[in-house]
Image (cartoon, rainbow, N blue to C red; front, side, top):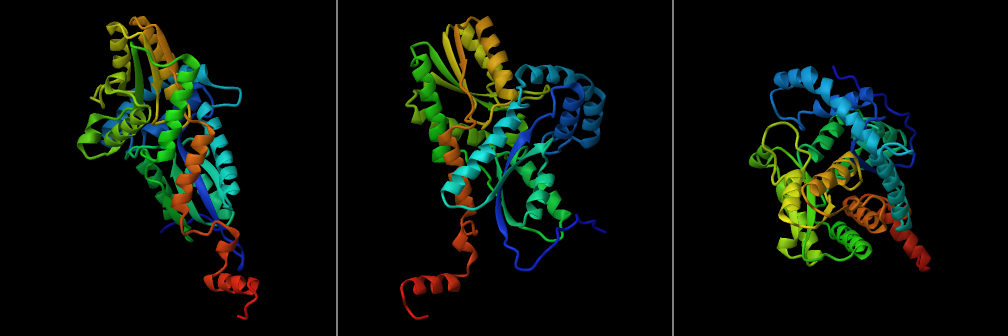
Length: 367
């Protein structure tokens, strides 16, 4: 027998609301070993993330990984932690507030909030909160530009698990990807141009490294479109920048375990470029819409060390889109397109008949 979540008190005639819920991957609550262990346990227990037999993986995860990795990861989190907390959570919270303002200026009356797939605030918690506010239409907007079963699909899974426990469902939509959205590509290109304006244009010995989060190679072989969408994003970015093919390199970071992942690997690429005499490298990570451990520590700190030790001279990381105006405008456009047909403005809550009557009355006609 299904045990449903408590339903909020219902009153007839109560105005219903439309909501947008931004969702990102997640973060530990603090840069400590216990907090990181809790976060990794939830993250790495997701069968969308690790696709190997459950019993075998349970033994590896609980017998080895959760006894070794949390300490190393906590040290890395501590290196990028801010006075306001986790960089990822800080950026996503600000993005939600700015998106609320941008959509409001465009005439939309919405509830805008954010959640994390792993850690807090959870998707289930925020969906229940939105429902209690009278939201009967909810747009899930995962902040993953490129679709993958291990990211976007996992968000849908979690939302569906909440729906299974909910008696009175809200309408729900979700954004699958925005890997080729013109505003997103334009914001990336502008961020690179601004970087060049500050640090000088590309010279003869230059590479722009376009680094995406990696996935096991078998995901591509099994039909996951992530690799293709990454290549599409990178191609559109390079075309926007008028970069010749020999001036940029697409690669994949964050490899975990011994199995083959999508190649070329970012670390190996940086090492090879440093050894080959390339003097300057700029790195951008279009798969991340907010700076986090994988960009601030792995790319900005470890990546620089790899390139310089190998013989490179000039290494710079180009920050994620974070709270850039052009990115928030693009995000507002993405949301507005997927909200199409839902009432998000004052007049939308009136029936077509009522709106016609009001227009006729305003024109002085008898109705």
